[in-house]
Image (cartoon, rainbow, N blue to C red; front, side, top):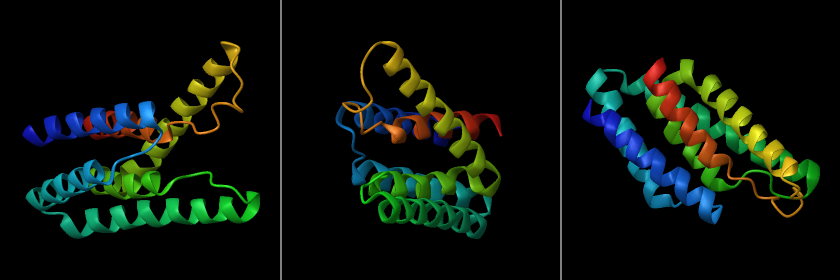
Length: 144
């Protein structure tokens, strides 16, 4: 259960930082990844968790490069890519699609709220996607 508390603390720190500054600090992502590796090791599924972490990283890296090639602009930052790799260590293959779905849904709700409040998304071009991925991580980890 202590690992669950560590996950919540790190997810809240990452979410708050990304929401405020629109970036994800490497040190916190590294702590999340290390705790995820320890959690996977203690559960005896380090190889599967490592593969899920790699899959999350590669998936988001491909999305980042594809968007950049299509739009000539960044759509995802490397912090989001690294974060999804760390998330894969915690939730495995079964949880990755759920984290992506819930995080994307929450980000969409946030974008709708911004526009309903009369602010243009042009000024909010950098949405805090990592914040919503962190919320989704906590939800998926505790409910899967």
